Length: 126
Image 1: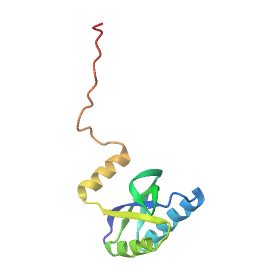
Image 2 (image 1 turned 180 degrees about the horizontal axis):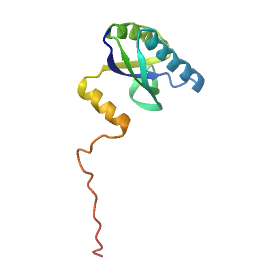
Image 3 (image 1 turned 135 degrees about the vertical axis):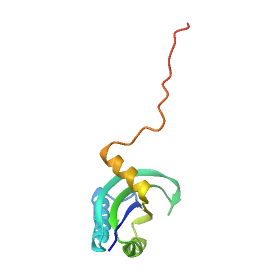
Image 4 (image 1 turned 90 degrees about the horizontal axis):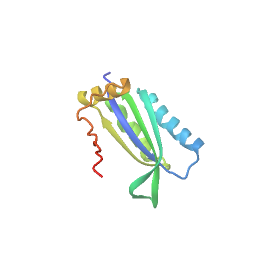
């Protein structure tokens, strides 16, 4: 079965403790693996300010997951996340070839510089 590459961003309830965050991330990882997926990377950003309040909360604990999975498994994973009380929001993106190439270059640390950074030259005219 063909496996596509996905990025999933989850926002967890920020009032939980570190142990509970780890449990939820492990739960989501297990959901992905139980449905034929393979985790590539888990990137926990920590507590960040939200653009707008969700459930009367102005912050959330952000987690980014990168994984390979069959397309049919995404519906099952998202359904399980939707009913989890401590997962406030989630978003799953399917990578196309260009996005996947950028991810692989980022992994290797070889992202090309498109625009040169402008440096300000200071002159002493005092």
